[in-house]
Image (cartoon, rainbow, N blue to C red; front, side, top):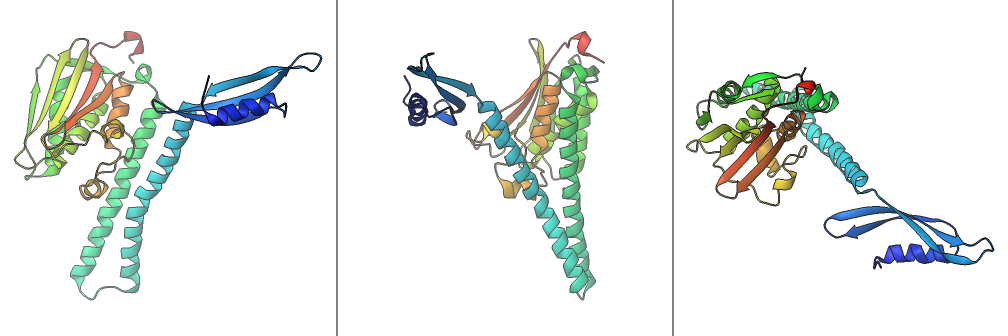
Length: 300
């Protein structure tokens, strides 16, 4: 019935009467599927061999979570090591071989300050993700009726002020009657993360658009840039922690690699989802879709 050689080997070992056999089999079809196998021989009361029993447990999700955890620990270590190494190197230079001129010392101190800010940003984002995960789902979220255009304006104002005068313009399209029940601070953070990314990856003469509207029983907030776009092979993993399409460019622009993961968790905390569509050379659209009407029993 099955052509997996290891599974056949386990069945034969159980039929041979060598005692229970345990192992794990991976089927490579429609994505890897991990099966934990327990095999044992079956005998009648008089000791006659009747066959073998194989019990298969699907442990795919467990293995994926283990891989995610390992990747997360490795990524956190790597992301923290970079600024720490830079800070340590320049501090040692200032202590043991201080530059003769004040300009060089100021430059070193400026680098140390920027790397310290980067460390702080990574830690703040990690804490934000931890709080979102610990607070649970929509039932535990403190919500209120929000006029969506106000959230968009606040988020855009924060991002444009931070980006400075050379940043692209941001066009907002949202009717005043678009409302959603949610947490205004979290929604502003999610929109700000998307707008901040769009501004970083768009040219100065390429405007960013933010559109919010009712779509059936949902409210969607879409942030569109006209930047370089993202290859289709990257799209399924964009919302993973520390996943970057271009690591060097992302770090240069000040990203922590956690912004989109925070967006995803904020959307899920509201009972919604975050998605992305992109075309190379034409730009990307990140969308947050939220329930327009939430269960009153889930509101606080």
